[in-house]
Length: 220
Image (cartoon, rainbow, N blue to C red; front, side, top):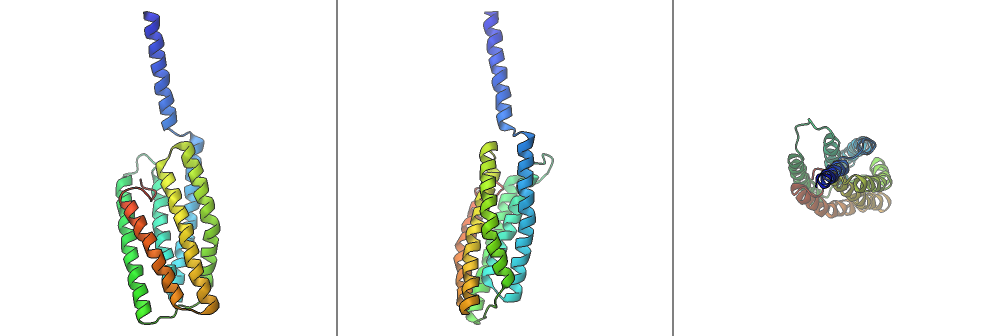
């Protein structure tokens, strides 16, 4: 009987240790997550700055929508990175609500600017910087999304998995924006830029709703 109790206690202790090991990613995986989010932060700073600058200088609603999504992706990556710091006071739920509200606000701004551009027949200029950054995003973001998804599966990190979805969405939005910018640059069809911005609006709204529910942005 005593031997049985000792064996049972040993099995229970081993199971408890295995559970803790499974729930706590090794230091190498934590370093990988920090490395991925660090790259994302640097890239999103560049992407957001270039796209918003292009939106202002070229009067492009499509670049404004792309820059808005880039800004929220920047917040998403920041929250996932800060989640590695146990003492940081910002909760993931609060960050998710903040990201969701910002997406709705930015979607409203994009809609207003797009409608005004159509009403006043504002002709967006060719933005070489915008074309370059959206083309680069089509290469960078799918790679980051794949790396984040793979690391999230290894570490069972839901926040990183959700951030991978955000990165993939950014790539899709880059494709829409690039198409609008390229068509306007080649054929000078001004309304295509506004059409690209309007196509981006449902993406921003859906992402905002998911962020409020802690599903899509890296705050879940």
